[in-house]
Length: 113
Image 1 (cartoon, rainbow, N blue to C red):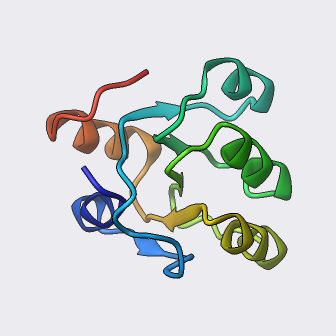
Image 2: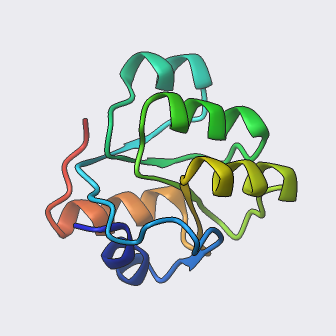
């Protein structure tokens, strides 16, 4: 599944439309502890987190993740979004809960890591 397909599937708003929407999403993960994500993250991952600070983008970039998904209508700070744009990292904002997003991704064939 591509980031563009994932965005439509969960009804999210793409906060970084400049990034390549054809990036392949290979797996999903939900966690808010950055050190844990660094230990368990993977390239191509869709990472769901309520964290919105600059370090989220640093971890996503380091792990070569495809997309960061922010649930529950939480807004990411503009400096973090600017960094995501520079790094080519997609950031999606969704009104759905993390649980709802995981369920939708799982039902549509995206496995967890």
